[in-house]
Length: 227
Image (cartoon, rainbow, N blue to C red; front, side, top):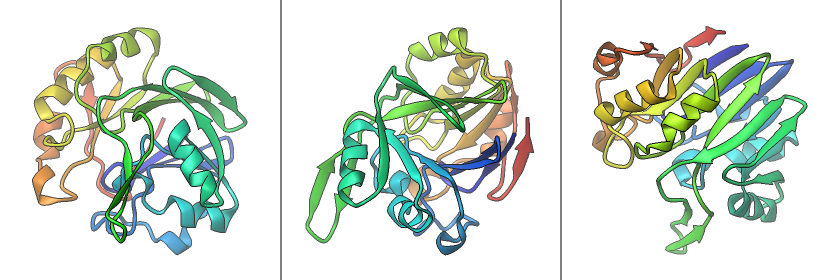
C-alpha cells in the first residue's frame, strides 16, 4: 500500500489496484502539488463538508465518473450536484471492493459555503475515517479537537498510520495532537492541516520531535510512504 500527502488534509492511498483520494482540496491550496485536471482516481473519501476539505470533489468525481463516500447529509448535497455517492454516518462501516471504511467521531463543524449567495449549506456531522485494506489500517482524523474516545479508537483498531491535524485555532494544536498520538497507539503519526493559511501556521518537525510514544514523520506535499 502506498500513501502520499498533498498539503492541508489531502491524502492519497493506492491499494488493491485502486487510487483513493481523501479531502481533495487542491484549488486554492497553495501547498498542494496536485493538478485538478490531471487527477485520475477511483474513489474520493470525505471527512466533512467544509470547503477546504470538499475542495475539488465535484469536478474530479464527475470527470472520472467515480464514487464519493461521505457523511450522509454531505453525500445528499453532492448527489444533487450529479455526483455518484455512498452515504455513511458516525459509527457505521462498509466493506467496499477497495477496502473497508468506518466513520468515527470528530469534534468540529460541517457546512459548505456558497459565497456568492452568502449561504451555508448544512452538511451533517463531521467525522474521522478509519480505512482498512491489505491488512493495514489508516486513521484520518479529519478536522477535530482532542476527544477521549481516541483512546477507544486506539484500543479497538491496530492503527498503522494516523493523520492528525496540528494547526490549532480550528482543530487540535500540537500539544493535543501529541496526546492523540499516544491515545490512538498509531505506529506512525503524520501531521496534517497546518501552514495552509497564516492562522494555522505550525512547525511540523517540532511536533514530530515531541512525540514519545509513536514514530512521527513529516511528509512534504508529494512525499509518500509504503506500508
